[in-house]
Amino acid sequence: MKNIGKKISALALTAVLTCSLASCTLGPGKWSYKTDISEISAGSWIYNTYQSYNEAVSKITEANKDNEDFDAQLIDMSKEKIDDKNAVDWIFDEAKDKCISLLTAEKLVKDKGIVIDDEQIKTTADMYIQYYYKGSDDSLAFYEKLGVSADSFGECVTRYNYLYQELFKKIYGKDGEKEVSDADVQKYYADSYISYYYIACSLKTTDEDGNSVDVDGETQEKNKTAFNKYRNMINNDKKTTADIEEQYKTDFSAESVPSSSNKILKTDFDESSLSDELKKAIKENKPGQASVTTLDDTLYFIYTDNMSELAKKIKYSEDAAEGETDNIDKSNIVYSMKKDEFDEYLEGEKKALKYETNDACISAYTVDRAIKIAKQG
Image 1 (tube, rainbow, N blue to C red):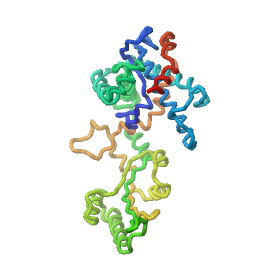
Image 2 (cartoon, one colour; image 1 turned 90 degrees about the vertical axis):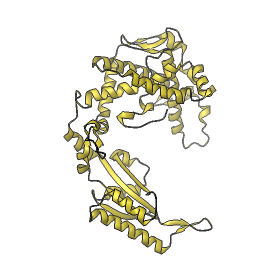
Image 3 (cartoon, helix red, strand yellow; image 1 turned 180 degrees about the vertical axis):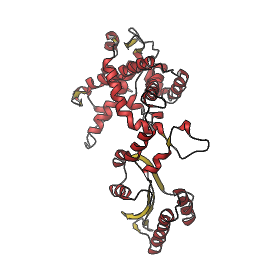
Image 4 (tube, rainbow, N blue to C red; image 1 turned 90 degrees about the horizontal axis):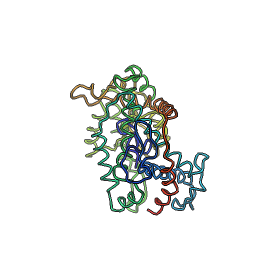
C-alpha cells in the first residue's frame, strides 16, 4: 500500500499498517498475540510478516540505489542487515511490533471510553478489499496462498489507522484531554510553516531542429512585463493570487496557469524537490509581497504569505461558518505539532502492555514462509 497522506484524516498506511481481530481459518489456535481485550488472528500475523518483508525489500533497495548490479528479486534476507539487525530478525520484530501496536491501541480505546464506528471501518475495509485483495485473480490467489482472508486483509489496512486517529483526537483534539489552544497553534504555524505561490515561465523554446534555444527578445520582454505587472498588482494594488491568475489567462490567452502553491512545514519544504535556487528565492521573498526573478532560464513570479496573518484563519472545520472556504483545518496543524509526542506516548504504553503469545502459531507461520511465498508470487 502506498502512503495516502500525512494528514490525520488520512494517515500513511505503510507508516502504521497493522492487523486486528480478523477471522481466519488457519490454525493452530487461530490467534498469534492477545490481551484480555483483543487478539490478533493467525491470518493477520501472516499479513504482518508479508508487509514487513515488503518494507525490508524497500529499505535494502534504497540502500543499493547506486549499485547497478543490484536485483531486488535476488535478495537473500538471511545475508542482509537492516539497522544493524539480520534482515529476517528485523522483519519478525517489525511484524510483532505491528501486532502489539494494535493490541495497545485497542486497550487505550477501551480505557478512554472511545466509541468506535465499526460501520465506518467496514466501509473503508470493503473498499480496500475490492481494489487490492480482489482487484485481480492473481492478487486473490496470492493472498489465499499466503493464508490471509479478505476479512484479515480488510482490517489489516484500516483498523489501526482508525484507532490511531481517534486516540489522537481524544487526547489533543477539540475538547480533548490535552486540547491545544488557538494561541499555541497559531504561534506554531507562524514559526514552523511556509506558504508560497509561484508562476513559472520558461525563457527557452525548441527550434525546428529540436534544439533548445532562447525565446526571441520580444517574447522575453512581453513575459517580463506581464510578470512585473503581476508583482505590482500584489504589492501596490493589494490584489490576490486569484486576481493574478485571471489576468494571466487574459494576457497569455491561456485556459490554465502554470502555477504551484503549498502550505508546508519548513522542514518538509527544505527536503522538497524544488531546486535550491528556487527554495532560496522563496525564503528570501518578503512575506505578504511578490517578487519577480529569473533562475536557470525560467522567469518566476513569487508570492509568500504572511504566516502570522494566515494563522488567524486556523479553526476546526466544524467551527467554520457556512460559506467559509479559506480556513486552515486546525486538526491538521495540531497533528503536526503533537505527532511525535503522541507516538512517544504510544511507545511507552506498548512497552507496558501485558499480552500472550501463541508460540505454535508463530512457529507455524514464520517469516521465512512469508518470504518464500512472496518470492513465488
